[in-house]
Image (cartoon, rainbow, N blue to C red; front, side, top):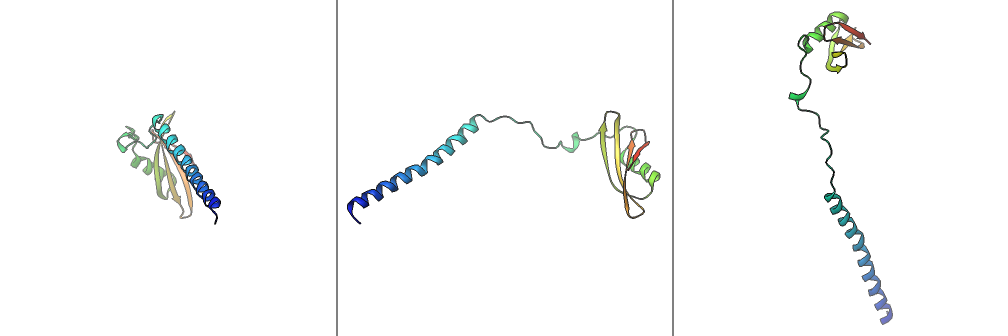
Amino acid sequence: MTTGENQMNRWVMQRLRTLSVIPLTFLLASWAAAQERSIDLPDLSPPPASQGFAPAPGLTLDKATAIARRSVGGRVLSATPDQRLSGRVYHVRMLVEGTRVVTVTVDERGQVKQRK
């Protein structure tokens, strides 16, 4: 290798090192700027159990499942409360005749509103 080629190789290597540092510097500067301008986002985590649905004064989950069981018969798979404009309802999923799954909606007065 001649002296000219040797100097050229050294020059190329220095430029490559310099060019490889530029994206890293840009990345760190962008990250720092983003940290300074951080936006406070609303807390989207689910509420603690104490802030969940308050039990309806006239109807509990146990009573709603008992009403659904009397209405349709079968075994209760799950029951969930739901707040609607018309008031609180409970959706009770039931296994009927060992093969069909139906959802029974019981309103806060204990009336069966819907069977699917």
